[in-house]
Image (cartoon, rainbow, N blue to C red):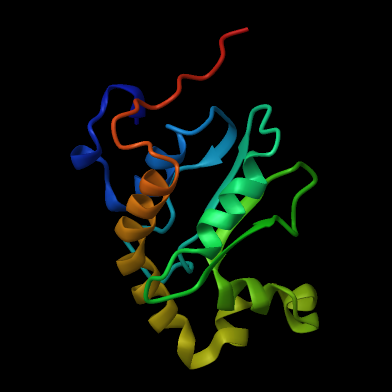
Amino acid sequence: MNFYTMEKKDVEPSNLVAYSLSKLSTYEWVRYNMYAEEDIYNRVPGFYFRFHNPGELYNKLSECIDAFHGDLKWKLFHGFETRNKNYSIEPYEVYQARLTDEFKENYNLKGILGSKYNELCEKGIKDIPFLSEHIEDWFNLKNKKPILPELD
């Protein structure tokens, strides 16, 4: 995948948030796909990343994500299961489930979320294009190109 030569209309739906945020800053680490397109129930949609030299950017991005109104409420947070300073953007209900003792013991989101799991997957996927647009509007990124990684 080469975001740097793509137009947004050509980006796969599962990569839209990655594309939009690549206009904001350079990634140090990223998982581009928010969900598995071949099995949408494989995991609840989420975006996992770390910016290179972010400064206060995470605080500004957190405000942006908190202000988004889609089918789901979304949350930006510092990843729980990471040694590095990786961040996650996930549906708020998934974030809440990750805080439970049950999750800390067995990491079973499907079990914790129960009958809501499939609905969260479906609504999360539906929200992705709108979340991407919201980010671009919030930071005025519509006419910006993705940022190339620094070459050391």
